[in-house]
Image (cartoon, rainbow, N blue to C red; front, top):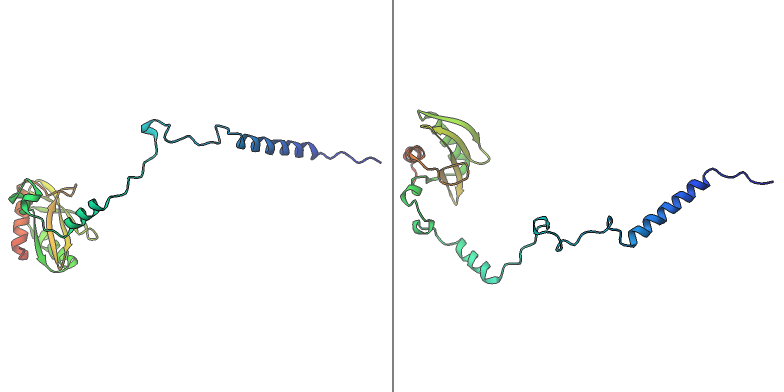
Length: 173
């Protein structure tokens, strides 16, 4: 008696041939399976490069600058205008933030657009000028400042006038 021919035998042959073809293509260097050399690519298409490590002299210079004080001449420009944009107040950041919010609410002509307690900032509109009044931790005290959305000192008379009145009301230095 002869055995009936199995219907799965052609499928098995096809599967074996397919596996062998993929293995040969993968080991022979098929362009689809091989990565391109990133250094042979156009400069705009290259992956980001890791910067070289800092040398010891640069690190020492950076560390020396951390503890030094900042003077008006080292900040460049502005001088007195930059000093008018902030002041220090005794107390923790959260307590000063709450007290600042009460004073801002009482200031006539000022609208608080939004509050961000985690950032310590109030987004205000005062005398037609929009800027942030920010409270940041500074050692054992808090520093209150007027900044623009980029984090730079807010320019104009409205921020200077508001900071001056807040400084007086909060007993800042």
